[in-house]
Image 1 (tube, rainbow, N blue to C red):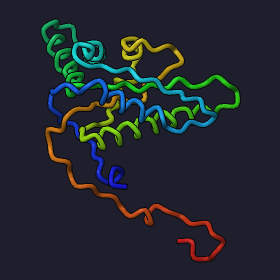
Image 2: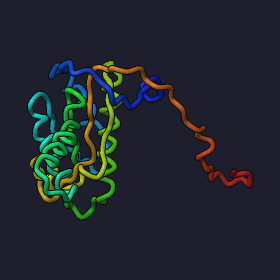
Image 3: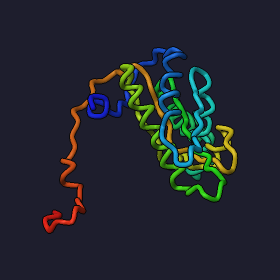
Length: 192
């Protein structure tokens, strides 16, 4: 419960490298997520050091394509600005899902399993004293991102986990009470 309540999305981390063994613990936590039919539909693409250049180029290309400007200096500046997103943490883990083609498998459940893997990874990063954040947004669904990360046509990116040594204090957590979001169907008349 401490890890669940104490974990926060921390987007500001130091550039200090993270040991491979630590990254592997985070990956192992993701790998133990539940998946219906035991399909384990997730895949992890770990980017560290100059390996993040692949992500930077994809971010830059996507921004340039959407900018609809032809001025080369402006495009270069735009590519650099958006490409810098890849370097916000020393470790970036792309989490993808490749749904099973078994007819008994429900596709949306494969995505849910990959999302559960991301949550496990965030909780493990927190338990190891790291700051981490799950990033998504329109660029991760772009065909150029898929191409850059070597994904096939039946694979989708569900998020980027950025992780590193925290360089900010964790904000206080707030949630509305679970009771405000719960309906009990227990056969009594007082189901409010």
